[in-house]
View 1 (cartoon, rainbow, N blue to C red):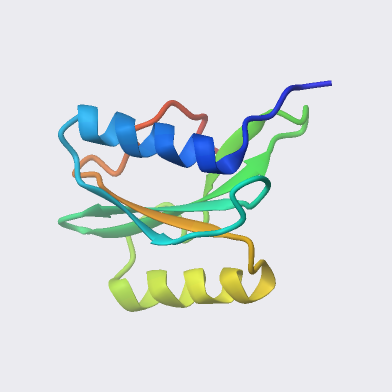
View 2: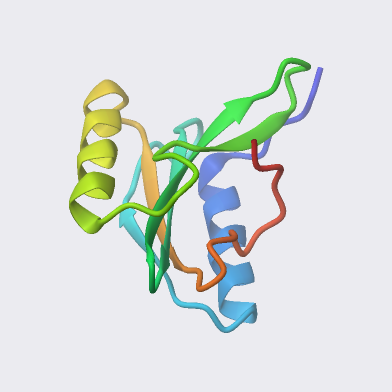
Amino acid sequence: MEARVKVGIWVSMALRLSDMAGRAAVVLRKGDPDSGGVLCVLRAQEGLVVLSQIRDAEGRPAWLRATGSTPVDQAAADAYVERQVKRDPDLWVLEFDAPDLQPPFEGRLL
């Protein structure tokens, strides 16, 4: 069985890594500190990408570009986040300054 880190601790780590990389980061919405899910909004000049936590076929954690492979505008990103929060009230939402549209933390993107 795989040991899992509490989400509140993971969020602190992600924010710290972003800070160390010199990128702004903010918690837009706090979720359950023990077992909530996470959405990460990556902000760049050309638009936004929302990453959603998933598990791959082998059960390993990964990230999905939930708003598609190309950046979207603020309204589309907000609409996606709002729909997901309605489905999962324990969801965390983080936003990162990401000029390269890559997260500041290590993670597999699918």
